[in-house]
Length: 266
Image 1: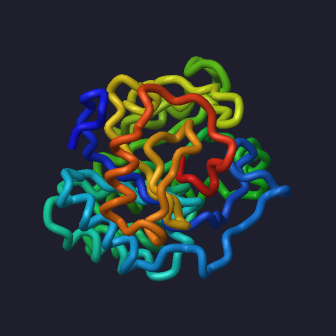
Image 2: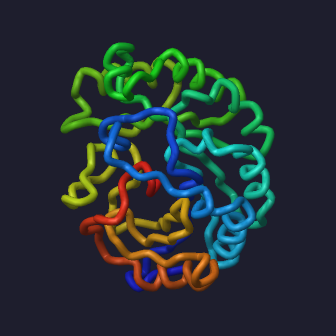
């Protein structure tokens, strides 16, 4: 399907939860955040209905995000349900990797094809500070488990402050090269301030080529990360919400004041 700027929209990013088991400083602060009530979060059948309607309209790529998607109970069941939808040829996930050692093989068996894992530093102490107590060794074991399970290509998402030449970014790049993994450098963004840029090594942030929609955990279809436009699938139905988002997708991102990264899926 084409939007009004003749961009082919074929990619749906789905936030399956606003919960996370880390508290990265740029994403989920340790205070001043409000979690959704469980009744507000879409059920699996509701998510799959959106995917099914999206596939009928031309969606071929789906990525599960969060929060942290692996804290959603029975998420492998959701993966299997989406994998069974005709027309979906690319099913991926973005994870912080903490639980990946446990889930990598079941995810692959359920139909997940590939994985992006967040890794901003290889320094254990810095990782603990950045994530408010996270253990980088669990992430490294998760990365290895994903590779062994065949969730390839495994890609690493590295958030940078200003340059991919920062010492931590260089260390992550070298780690990726040594282990045959691609690294994507994501400049730290400000939703409310409208600060974003094109992802180094990826396609995110390139408004002229943007091919994606986003489904939040509480059912809002958003045509742009940096926009407050949204249409709720529970209120409008999946097809109408998707069509509205495509038809009103802006030419370029501006600002987003109604969401934060932990509850929009990034």
